[in-house]
Length: 312
Length: 301
Image 1 (cartoon, rainbow over the protein chains, first blue to last red):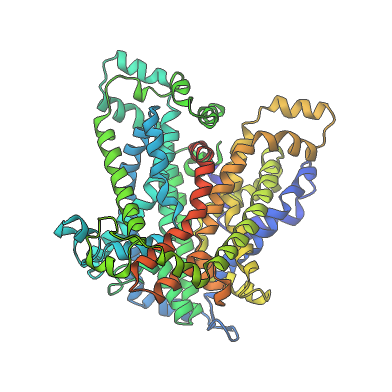
Image 2 (image 1 turned 60 degrees about the vertical axis):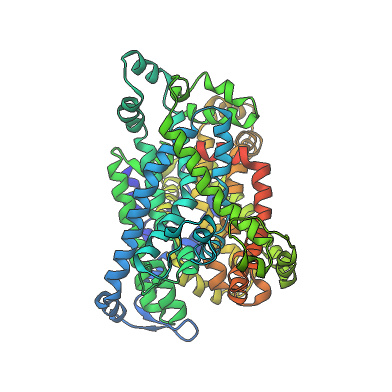
């Protein structure tokens, strides 16, 4: 399984398969993928190749596109802003993963119980997922206002801080909001994973006298391994795209403390009219996404993430 | 693997599900000892979810002066609908319509194309379909937002810049990998004997797809449709980059410019946040069982 996706890292290779092999014995079915394939190649694969191509050009977003050789790569790779943006991106990735995973497992195990009130709680937990990241960011900006927001309302002085004005606090706020938004979704995935663990295993453990904590660590957790990998993959690749939330909430500030790569790409390209360097950043983002997905897949043993996702 | 969907499926049938499915799966709750840690955290998390939402709701009914003078957590002393009126007067009906057009226009083809592709990938074989499948799986690992600059270029070249179609086409493409994956998982669970008997009855693959696979995967189709509708409805980067005219704004973008314009009038900004959520909330209330159980089954395979 892993061989399949390793091969697919080079999009052009998969693309080449298209014309020559259509007529095999599956010819009668293969045409069914054509609409999806056309859309995905047109607005997924070609842009993916295009982002690499554009990284070697100069373009202001309006005028002509001119070749630039390695100039953009040279300037971006030597720009001290790049290591900073990379650091912020990985920090957001790691912190959001490290906060969300244990809490999602805890919550997922909790709502996997079949009591009715837990099902009702699960319905309420899901509410943040209905809001757009833009809406959440706008609401939290107001909520975190030191004078009129939550801290003042609850009479808790420690909640009345200049949350978005200080770098470390702003990072904390981003991680909190991401958790607020996505923990429900991941706990739902864990709920599904927990419910697949056969009851007989717990009965056997019960007879052997294993307590609840012991059961959790020696049975539930190992049984959830593939679910953990699926959920972590979604979290980690997803964290590369926290553009909307950060753009609306902090705009990357204060003093670039929350300027992740995706935001850096947008600001350079669409605000700074430097599409070439922005494409370099985008290419780096794609590479990070693919490398991380491959690593996570390896962690899963026998093909891990993708084959798990594939349902194989 | 077949067992994994049957776990979740009873959940769709309704209220009595808790007692019924408790028999066959998950002893977590039946071990007799309550899960104190989980319980405590479960209720704490409920508070963490609901307090901000409560605050958004009450504040949206406050007058500007009431917001600055009263306690932030107390309900408004004289509730007003003025904020909602201001939002509606700012053209939100048009933005709402734009969002509906983009969402329906993207989700219907995306799910239809995905269903056909997933059927072909699961039922067919051979290198071509394997290659296509691998390509879609790779799509899951790529942060598609990173392709926004070439998408912008393509949209300009197609003369679609600043149109709703410019939002619809990339949205379809972005929705495909996950939708194909989830629908494929469900089509794989259809027992092979059913396909065999369809074949013996002389049904074409096209007929089998619509008369057998489609009805049997309908719950999954509804689930992914709601999920993708949420994604498209809430999408922000595509409209930010690909449209320009105020009258082509979709709701998240309209929200953003509204809060730029009325940044001091927090109650009105929060009213706009709530108004844009109402349609999706109604969809969630109608389809929540389907969505929650379907997502559980779709992702935990």
